[in-house]
Length: 132
Image (tube, rainbow, N blue to C red):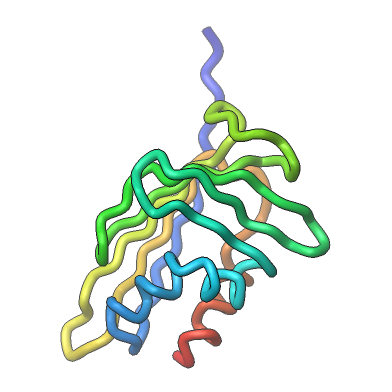
C-alpha cells in the first residue's frame, strides 16, 4: 500500500463583516458566483451535490460533506473540470467561521489534497466582495 503525501493549504482571514454575512457569501450560489467563478450551485445539506463553474476553466462537480449554519461548511470538489464526482479524485475544503471579539468574523479555510496554487486570489476576491 502506497502512502501519498497530502498537500494542505490553510488560510485565516480576520473580517469586519459579521458571521451571518460571511456565511451567506460562502453558501449562497448567487453570491459565490460573484467572487468564486461565474456560476455555482449547491444543495445545502450533507451529501448534497453541486458545481462551481468558470468561463475559462469549466464546471467542477462538488459534494457538500457537512453543513452546520452559520459556523461550518465542508465540501469536496473535483480536480478536473467536466468529470463526474468521484471522492478519490477530489479535494476536501473546510470553512470555519468564528465571531471575532469586538465584531466581525475569523474565517479559517483548509483544503486537503490540493494540487495547484490557490485560494490567495479567491480569498482576496471574497474580501473585496464583502467590502473588507
